[in-house]
Image 1 (cartoon, rainbow, N blue to C red):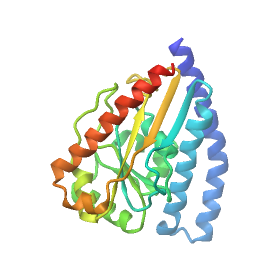
Image 2 (spheres, one colour):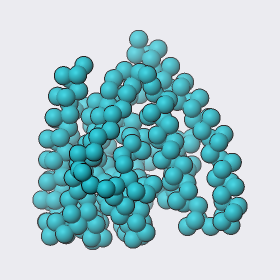
Image 3 (cartoon, one colour):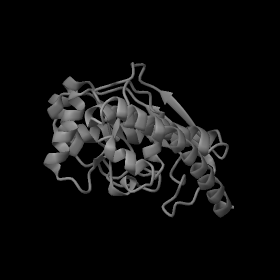
Image 4 (cartoon, helix red, strand yellow):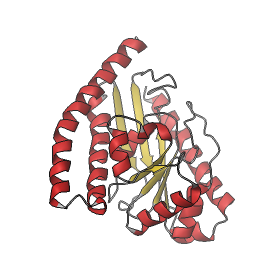
Length: 253
């Protein structure tokens, strides 16, 4: 059953991806011609296309087998200049970023494999996404600070790799350090229910995914809190929230 479902879901994703590319690529080409192929002008457009590609995948391509519910527990307006910190259970997490309410199409800090995907990887490079496995720290720092100065939200998975289950790995401090230097808030985002969507062997299971944005940690608090204490505070907040979310999902079947 898992194999059959995986084939169906990936086929739906492929078809949706082809249709989306057939619309998005000509639109991007026309836009690039209009702005003279200038990278600083095309990058925001590319990021918007990635954002809507992600929305297409999670709200159209994987239905009706997987349903995604998004909640905003912050009561705050969508952030622009901020570092969004997410837990990392599955390979679907980079796509789920598209479900989070935000003011500006974001950039993600990712490991190398998403950059090699046929659609996502091509556009991610032109959208100035951050490949943390190939870029030295100083270059990552400079690029991130510049993006934040431009008001672009940066989404990070500080575990560094997906956990593959309901547990949470230790957090790396890189982007917490950059957030402190940039003087921007940190916005925790909790994801639950997708630890087997897909699993580590990329097999799909039906289910429900819950994405919940939490209240931001103000820039002032980020700056005055010691680095280790800051990352542990965010990690503990996400651990507690995902535990509650897992219980909610189990109670609702």
